[in-house]
Amino acid sequence: MMRKVFLWAAGSTAYAAFMIGYLLLLTLYLPSILIHEPDWIEVGSFAEYTAESVGENGTYTWRIISIQTDVSGERIARINRTYTPERINEWRNYSSSISDISLRDGIIDLSIFWFNRYYNVYLVDLSDFMIGDEIFGGESLAEISVRGQTVPCIWLKRHLPSGWGTGYCFDRESGLLLYRGSAYHGGFYSRIVLKNTNIPIGSHHSKAITDLLIVSPLFMVPIAGVTTGLHIAKKKKYTFSIRAWLFFIIFNGIILGCVANFPARTPWGRRSWGIASPFAPMRVTLIGLNAFFWILVVGGAMSLIDDHAFPIIQKKQ
Image (cartoon, rainbow, N blue to C red; front, top):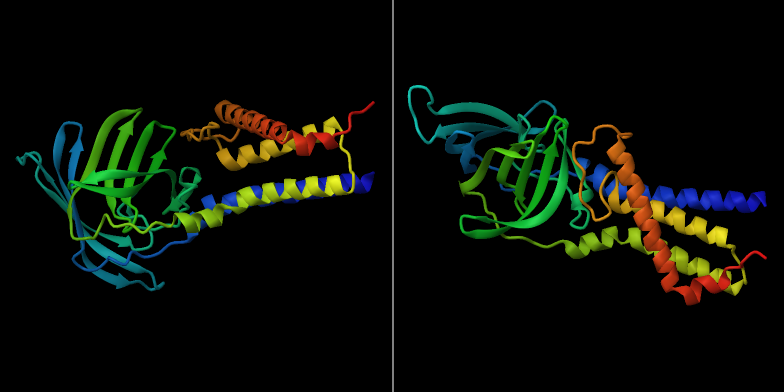
């Protein structure tokens, strides 16, 4: 009896560790460490944006004026940033500054100029990206109209418990920032939209098939495990009680809930921003809701394969 319990516990632990660990590998670890330097970066690369904010409009431009390598071997671009207000007067003139930016991070003052991280197209909304010292959450893949051209893009968002939120839209091929908008408690504060650039954008090479193969173990492992288990059970005429099947359904529902909606999302995938504490009532409620939803899904799936699963259930007399 103890041996059977040990095997159940060991198998369940290994299964849970693989499913959750593999998900975290694809959505937290790899997006933060797999970084590439954009191949379009060179002296003279620039981007010009239409800038709007509460009470003022203008033009924001950055241009790379030099590239150098620091003592640690990291390549640094020196850029000239210029903001020109729409109405220039004695109180508000244009402003210009020189800043150094890491080609690997692409970030200055919490503003991302280009995105160059690994992401899986099927797990974007579950992924978090550590850029600089901040975490930016993946939101979705979409398309945006830039200079009359439809451009495939990836959306990132950064929300703070204070109520500030910033959304970023990047060209999926070059990683160039196309749009950035900020809001406070849902109200408009500012935005910039790409107006002109000498960086190629718009062309896109799909990696959907490759990403599907990468994410497939999250589906294939449970399917293979259930199929193999049912085959062995039927072949060796093993029988299981209702309690054992309930444990199977509840356990898999919890694991799938963690994998599909980790760490705090509704069962339909909507991210819940601004929940700082892991024990916050909203987070605990969402975890419970996810588990309940996926328990129902697993139970329904088991019912659909009634001919394979339930004939080997032994009801206790």
